[in-house]
Image 1 (cartoon, one colour):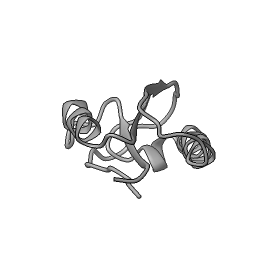
Image 2 (spheres, one colour; image 1 turned 180 degrees about the vertical axis):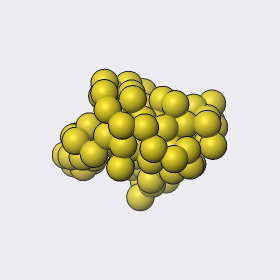
Image 3 (cartoon, one colour; image 1 turned 90 degrees about the horizontal axis):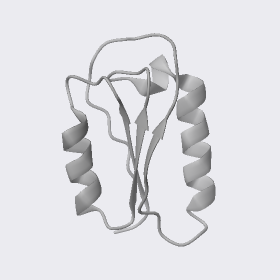
Length: 88
């Protein structure tokens, strides 16, 4: 598989972190980013944090494969709880 970004909110109740962790384990070149202060829609709930994570990931795709798990801080709004995993 190619580089994959799995992005989730720490407080996502619709698609809990353990599901994202399983996806990460199944993708050898994946990176799991857990967005603090977000539920199901980190893109809407923590847009600056999410955009920063996407930029870092896109930049790193030019480097060797990623295998890290990252938790990023963020404070702010809570929105609806949904399951969202972005992969490429």
